[in-house]
Image (cartoon, rainbow, N blue to C red; front, side, top):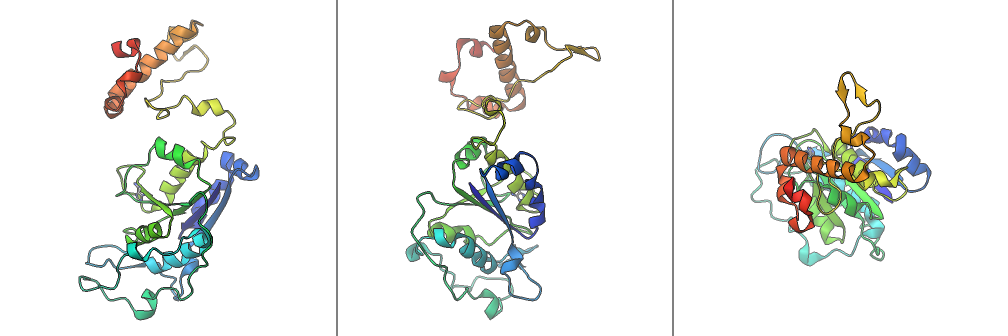
Length: 286
Ligand code: ADE
């Protein structure tokens, strides 16, 4: 899998050379390229943002800088522009902000070279606190992609036309939130999604079994049961006796009951979403 990450703080991703992620790169499972968005600016200040059209606080990332960057990185994978779907950007009558200076808002003069659409489309992901939640299901789906490109926004976010435009160019564009809180930018959210996705790539984890039984995995996702290791008693607290019994049937039942009970307490929404047909009789008693 090839991964490109665009950010105004590409150093955030230096840590990707560590640990399993570093090993996966050394093994050739992953190829990671980080890019500084400011490399696609042309002004002395390398500015990537501007005031929001319609007014309001904060700054919004400019589509012109992002498009120069993304046209270059995605060039070979971009489909011919679908003019019928293209947003009409000519009407600025409802803008409440400052007008752009002519040269800053101009599109790049040279269009990217367009070749055949790739059999597997690249996936362009924008972290966004106002987007649908990123789930284990998304991580599983994206672990099969050949190419992921993350666009890390800062400030009040990025111009909404950027994802809209790249959809018209045949790119599979996704916007995801990693949780109901607001971070300062998309870098941490990208790291979270990257880790959730890449650990599912076959060969990434040392022990493939460890990802089969964990929380949020499978059709009927439950929180995982709690884990213990030796000693059997520590500081007066004992491991549940059943786990020491050697009876695998009882251990499995105990763990399953605990997963159901804990999920019901902590995440009742996951219990609501369960497909009852996939529960066994003993589950129903819990
Ligand atoms: N950027 C800022 N906050 C975010 C969040 N919660 N999820 C994804 N991207 C973000």
